[in-house]
Amino acid sequence: MPALDSAVRQVGDFVVVALLLFGLTSVVAPLDLFLSSVGVEPPWFAGLVAAALVALALLLARPLRLRLVARVWGVGLVVTAVWIPLLVFLELRGNPVGILVSWAAALGVGVALTYPPLWRAAEARLRVE
Image (cartoon, rainbow, N blue to C red; front, side, top):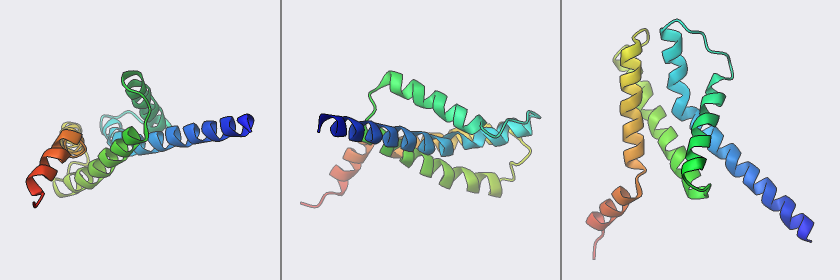
């Protein structure tokens, strides 16, 4: 049974890392459009490489936990939900500076919304006793 336990643990670790990478691809996706707007045509796998580099930096800074993966997915969802309307409504398609500024703003909103002390403070304010 120890071999089965080890195999299950390795599959679980692989799934967590895969979820982390897929969550990070939505965070770094705007960089692909930025590179295209400055005249650099990135290869098809550039987003995955950028996500892997960010994941490596995250894993060097903190241990891999499911909470980290959930926060990354939250940031990715917020970046997508905020950045695409900014891109469309402000017509930033060919503007590299506008793309970077809107991506940074969306990333800031995503990080702020997934910051645990902010959630605790909001919960404390909204809690009815």
